[in-house]
Image (cartoon, rainbow, N blue to C red; front, side, top):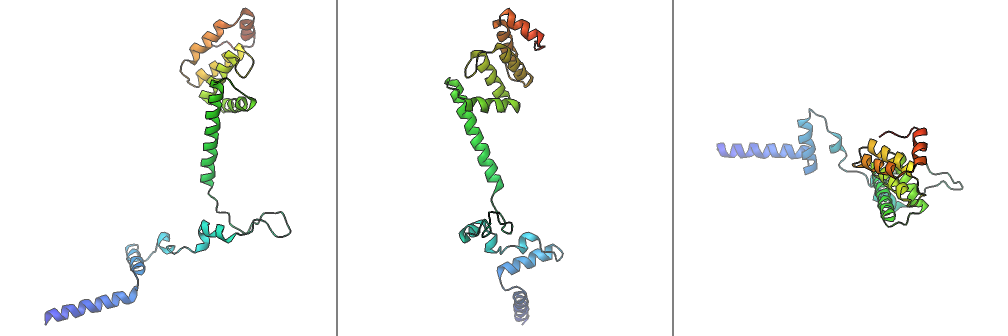
Length: 192
């Protein structure tokens, strides 16, 4: 008899519990709510995201990007583009351009595009670009031969902790003629 009483108590408990929660999702919410003193965290509240918030659904709907009879963009439509993806693509494109520039310098086919890429990186204090531009000036590749500029760039590379930059600056100084050395000293560029 005791056994039947325990079974009936268990059945009534399960029935009362199932009356509160009719699905596994609701059971999960009840458990989380009881663990969090009645508070239901946001990640549990928003388990059923409306389709309008999913980017693929927005793209399927072909929402207008400009107002009718106007060239202004629609400010009411939320733009859900992935900015991080755009940044990653921009970084990948910049790295690809830089690798192409390095190959062009190595193969002695420097155009103004590669020169501009290198100088813009030198202005941003990129040590590798500074060393490459110094080498280009010392050899006359892509730019006119300019030992004074090469010396200054090698010194800048040394300040950026490029290995052997100081030794390369010394070699460039030794390759200078006396007039170039005087010009370098008068310009205040001698810092060996």
